[in-house]
Image (tube, rainbow, N blue to C red; front, side):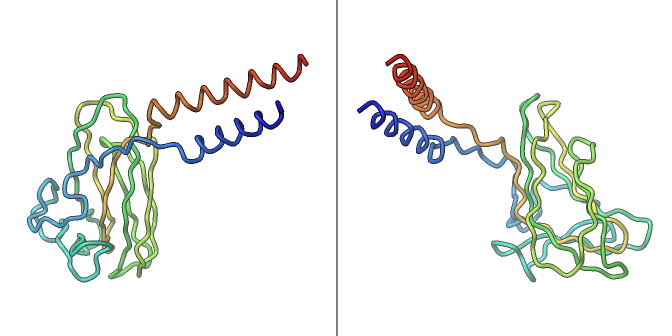
Length: 194
């Protein structure tokens, strides 16, 4: 009989761990899919050769994405946003991107988190949209700058930018999981003593 109770408790604990609910954390990026026709909340250089512009030709989702104008060799195109963050908190970044080219097959794409490089990769030109993730970014203050860059002669298409805190299990889920594990431990101890 004890073995049957043990297996039942083990099954319940496993179900809690696998299917336990977690509190969803909101995306702190404003206008993450670039659906606002004025690029609200985003900053990009006013010079048309270095900035990003809205593009409705092939968005990842919604009606629009952004892309930069390919600039001559020696320039860097940027788009950035100042995010409201909690100092010391960890955040995960994800975004969808692809590159097209003018003079190079592998444009250099970078991401800066509060001025620090956290992503630097040559992305093959031509699509399709690919999801990139950068986990574990720590905020150093109440605002954090997020900046995307693309090197000379490359065209970066960017959409669906997300910055959110990692998923955290709800307290009730943790409580149930701990009580299940305590029950399993008690049954195992009882079984050994018998």
